[in-house]
Length: 114
Image: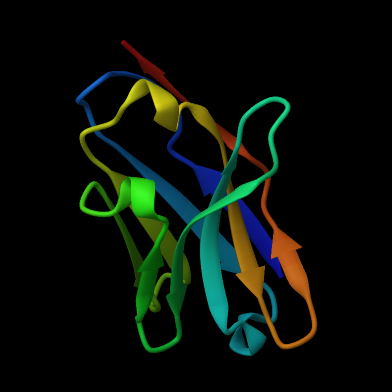
C-alpha cells in the first residue's frame, strides 16, 4: 500500500485547510485509516481515525474542529481542519492499517501563524 498525502501549508489562526491522502496498492486489506501529527521533540500523536464503516474517532483537542472522511471510489481520505490554532502546527502523516501491517505516507507540513 502506498499513501500520498497533500494539502499542507501556511494558514492564519482561525483559518482552514484540507489534507488529502490517496491510497494505492492492495487497499482491500486496509481496516483503519488515520491521520497523525508530530512536532519536533515529541512523539507522533493520533489525530483522527476512520474505519471501513466510516466510524470516526478524534483526539480530544481537535473534536469539533477537524473532520475525517473518506471517498472509497477515489481511495482517498481527507482531514478537514477548521478553526486552526497555533498548536495545530505540525507535520501531518497519513496512516493505513491492515491486520498485520502499518503503512505510512510522507508527511505534509501544516503551519498555523498566530
